[in-house]
Image (cartoon, rainbow, N blue to C red; front, side, top):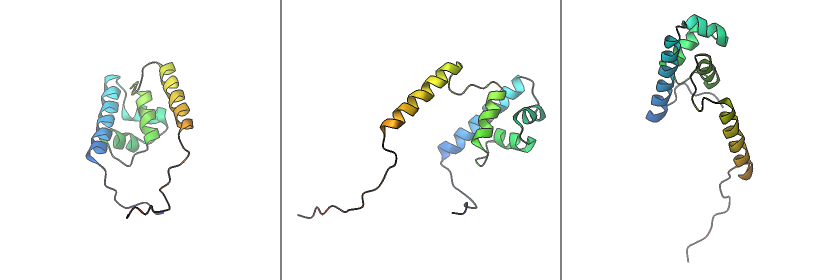
Length: 112
């Protein structure tokens, strides 16, 4: 399936990505790091750092989280063991759920 030329996003998603980018930028500036410093440490281009900081929706989430880690921005918990514990709990919870969600294939006749 081809990637759409333009995709629409909800206001919530756009604002969340913009907030995330601003948080990364503020943390970077507070620590006195340049865009080039962060880009080199994350092994990404300076342009990608700029796009993430501007909140562009097409930026890689993995790269954005790596930038957050480099500038010391803790999104979930400041304690690494807490994040690991939460991750383990979510994985355990997922094992209890069905592997896939399917829509019903047979139509119920309810016209009495």
